[in-house]
Structures are given as C-alpha cells and as structure tokens.
Length: 182
Image (cartoon, rainbow, N blue to C red; front, side, top):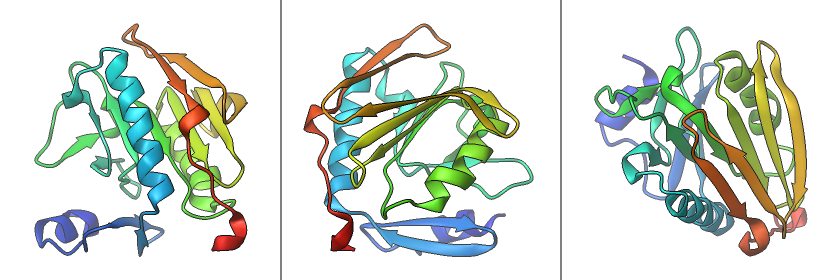
C-alpha cells in the first residue's frame, strides 16, 4: 500500500487540502479559489464535449508503476478505464489538467511534464493563474512532450482525445492571481 492510499483510507486528508507524495515527501496544499474555479470551468467544457462524468474527475489517485502516484487537479480517462478501489492506472489516462498553486511551480512545470510524458499521457494542460497562460503539451516522449503550445487566457484551447472526442475550453473566464499574493 502506498503512503497516499494509506492517507485516503484513514481519512487523513483535511477538507480543502490537496495531498501528494513527491520524492518521498508528503505535500499538503490548500486549494485556492482560483484553482477550484478553473477546474470547474474545464469540467464544464469537458461535459459540453459529451464526455461522461464517470471519465472525468479531480484529485483522484492515479498510480504510476515504480514512481510516486499523483492526484491531478483534473483527469480524463478512456472508455475502458478500470477503477481499482479509489484509483486508476496512468495507462488509462488520456489527459491531465493542473492549476499551479504557486508561481513557476516545479512540480507542475518540470516533474509532472517528465512523468506524464514518460507514461504516455496524450495531453497535459497547465492553466496558470499567475502567468495568465495555458500551456498545452502533446506528443508524449520519454523526457516530456514533443509539442508545446502556449495560449493566453481569453482564447480557446482545443484538443482531440484518442477516443475522437474534441474538447474546446474557453479560457476567458479563468481567474487570475497576482504572484505577489503568495
């Protein structure tokens, strides 16, 4: 059993906090309103694309063999994704969305890029309320992603999942945050 599974089973995660294990450390981060609102807007766009709610979730454990597990802000899985207790395998993940909790978050911009790319997550999207930019990565590779596109807040981000489902996300409602408010 992983540390994350143990915390979940013991109800050891305080309400309003996101808990992740990185490099053997447990990191508890309170979610900001900007994170919650952005994830809600993305979920609405995914729902509008016709993707069933059973395939879209936030802060649910995704297992990565031989690596730290993760609980992305938003995850989209394939039609045949198999739930394993309260988690899913990274092999079932089609897309991940993260909203950084701090400016230039190394976890989101470095470690997750390498991990999600290495494990073949087709799309990794970072919606950054500090930079006011969405970074959409595709073409997963062992060291990250081959294609990186930056889209300023206010424009639409689009991608087509391996299932053929096309997702269009209007970023004009994404909230922003001043980096000095940290």
